[in-house]
Image (cartoon, rainbow, N blue to C red; front, top):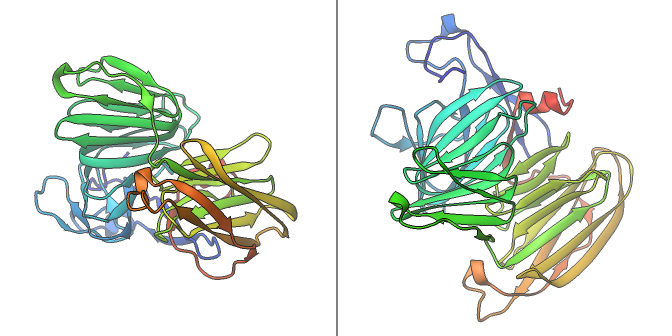
Length: 369
């Protein structure tokens, strides 16, 4: 895998799906090596998307931060820094994504990627990241979240990591995570729904604990035949599925799950009034149902079912608004959900917020190209 600065002749085309009619548009391909100026990049290790706020980029070998450009290439050793209320997404060539949360500093350490196997490593210098890891044919494929204190590694799934001056924390919503110390010794294996905290120099004995971002959640279950996508209340972060059945997850602590019976589940942290926009796209013509459940600490607070008929390629949407306990509403992690309501389904024709980069490798794997 090229680091983006060596003179190799591999040309990789990266597709971007701006959620505008779910169209997949080619946004660029690297010129041939002979046409590249000295120091230019002929293939991207990864691509950076700026979802909002102030995001900076530090080139490998440099110490000077520059404003990051939405859609810019990243190379091995590059760093991404986010400011307050700022979020960015790193998309690797296999389709795996790392969402960089506000006030974070991360570095791309490794990205050896082929159509059948990938080995990706991202170092968290400070802050929080959330990763969606694509399953490839080779079971040895992996994505690791590194720190100076510990490393979390998964073969496929949804994992996160946090680095602060006094600890490293990691968690998983899907896929077992192996946690190792700086010498590579296994400390423990986390199962979905668990987190653990590791202090430097063996100051504590890591143990699993339950993981949740918000005590209030919104769970959307779509019947077979439609793909659901949830747009968060900031209008930028999305979690769900896009045609042709590709998973997208930029929302810290969310769950995106495709079931064997053709149904799809999206669960997002929901300690806010909303609105949360739910869009469904038909993958075939017919009737469908959406079941929306709002919960607090795992206990159901409200449930609503919407139904309709849809054509292949057609999109429909609803907006979910919620009521929170006024005494707890100011703190999103602990806000107590008291009720919620989804508007009637309507046809969606305009552009959607959010952006998704679709890897040619992943598109080919699902028969999309």
